[in-house]
Length: 191
Image (tube, rainbow, N blue to C red; front, side, top):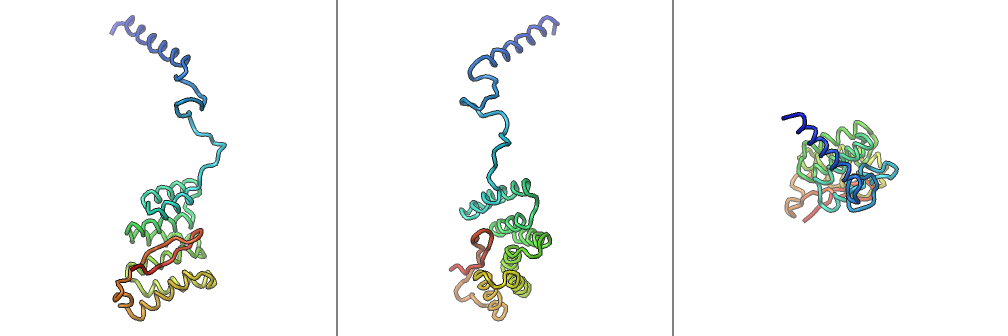
């Protein structure tokens, strides 16, 4: 390519950029107009990823909830609350091994975090580890001072299942994780 041809191409490109900057829809930094603004307004607060994740869990959108929980982890770090939420979402997706690992990590972060203990009990019930599930529900119940009816019911179900492993088999009882309040979960018998 000759030098004059290269100079003409560069001149044409610079002219196109300069003209685009002068037009109404071209290169500009204002947020007004039909085009998306350049960058993010850091002065505005974003929606809490945990809150978004909880709402997605309630809507049955577990994969999307996991993404929201990871966004919360990016904002807050891997707190016990975030790890517990990730564990719950993985449980709903049937990823019991991942759920158990995440919930155990949540308990390591905060040994008094009741929802993590309760959710770990749910995973253990699902995997047939009844003895440990009963112990974990007892811990959740003690940490909660017996205030939560849901945890009391979880413990009752675990004890009944431990005493009679066929408990619920005649009713085809399935256990499901349900979010309650700001972070409590319960184990419900669903027909």
